[in-house]
Image (cartoon, rainbow, N blue to C red; front, side, top):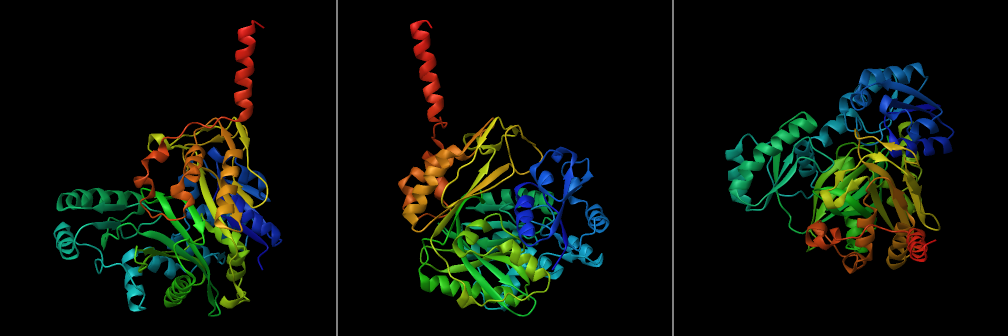
Length: 472
């Protein structure tokens, strides 16, 4: 087992990894830019090192990261999610430096990170895939020909994309021509490659992903599924586990396919196999994420398995120590991504100073956060303040508990997604448990929410009004 791990990340992600390391008796080294000098992940690490002045580029400086890892006596590096977590070159440089990379091999990152290569690998393994281009599209004429043969709507996607970026739906030739140029530019800016591919658009699908774990000894299992269908512009907002849409037979079948997909590319460590499931329960491979997922907490809630600890154990060479029949799931879990954003203004980021912070608590409540009263959310990074994970024995109990927790949670000083989530969870559309990726578009009334007022705020306002009326 490792003695010291450098965490090549920041915020709640770094704090999450620190917690598992602490339970395993492993020291952690945090990195931070000058903008993050007061960040919570810096305070909670065993050692913290300034990586550079630039708020973004500093975290992407591979040579500086590895230099810090070596000089601080680390024997492994955990990339977390975002930043360099799906960068094969980073993984190679870590290994070449004599350190252990806590994640899959560079080749697996390369092969699964390129969506056209991933499609080819899954097709060769007999995994069902969405009909689409055999490789990267050469030009707009080829794209138009393929769209005509498949029929609209179609999806244009960045070949090297991920995280819901570089994806556009096209419903006509004119939209395809326009989006071909726009998506190519987006792909180049975000991923350094303007290669695009095309898939048939599955209308009204569920976005369902399976968590897999695989060790270096040939063992692989899945930890059941997560339903990530509540999104906006392909960005996940709310996730739940297990899916209310699958029955046990389909759950077993899709889990077996997910494990087969991991084995087909000799995958080692934690990964996520993502599927689209249509209204007739047909499912299609979409992509494989070669890293820890933001929403891993709900899988931990229903299985009791610490995925980060398993990542570390696998990277150290240990076998899984259990088989598929040893893994079960219990109850239901929901994760809410609480972002400093204004949903009524296109989810525009709303950085600023946290003036008051009171997190939810009680049975079945988990908070993964990185903010505190007085903390200034910088404008340079993802706007996530915290993740609220709620668990309950039944779906009904979980929904009621989630609503209680959302009203208990209070963040002031910046606009957040909390009021939106209260509106969503209060709705029959959500509590029914039956929704697809069109949830937000089909329910625009969710954005017609009122700012939350705590009872003591209302009481104070009433007291002031009474005092004013009495001339006190």
